[in-house]
Image (cartoon, rainbow, N blue to C red; front, side):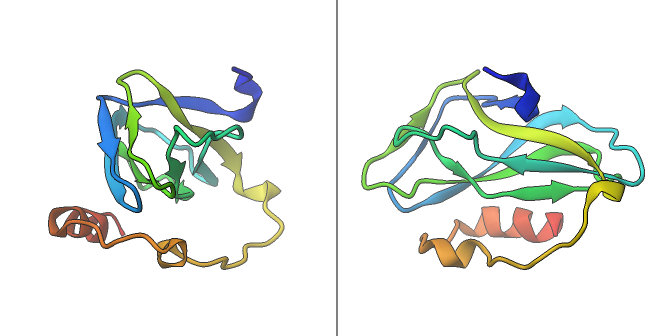
Length: 127
């Protein structure tokens, strides 16, 4: 893997995502993001049909406990991710390098089914 893309994020456990569903996974990582920086979370640049799409995210210096990831299965077959498998990339970016920000949509644009209530509650707490 080319680590110039960013910091590889690994699955903390084996999980299966059913077709058309999404799942919240919180990586047990303690963060210390410097002020005037953000941590971006993205899918790997080479996603195959056996890997989930990671809904892009941004964390700032206020966030410390765990990295919340929303994983989506956009395929017609279940996807199983084994413990220790790399499935996302995190990159620390200085705010001084950002020229502009544009809204591009949200997870409802993906056509996925609703998350289970406990995941919705956790997502709301994170927002």
